[in-house]
Image (cartoon, rainbow, N blue to C red; front, side):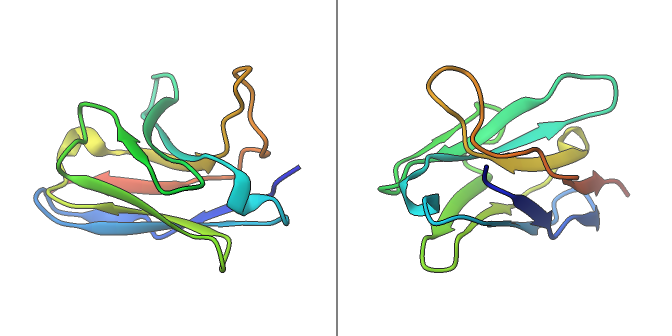
Length: 118
C-alpha cells in the first residue's frame, strides 16, 4: 500500500497563496493517478484536483483557475499550488491515489491543515 505524507499547510490571509506537497512511497507512484482532497469541519471529504501519470489534470469547479496540481515522478511527490485563497478553502488537505473501483491505493495520512483567515 502506498504511504502518503502531506505538508505545507498553514494560516494565510484571504488572497494569499500556499503550496502543499505530498510525498509518496512505493515504486508504482509514477503509474498512479494522484489526487488532492479536502475536508472541512463537519463536512465530507471532497476531491479538489487530480493528475494522471501522464500529467493530465482535472479540478473541482470551486478551485478552477486558482489551484494547480503537479507531480514529480522522479521524487515521488505531488504538489498543489493554491492561489487567491478564500476562507471557504479552509480545510484539512489530503493526497491519495484513487482506484477505478472507488477505493484508494494509499492509506490516508494525517493531512495538512489550511486555514484562510484575516
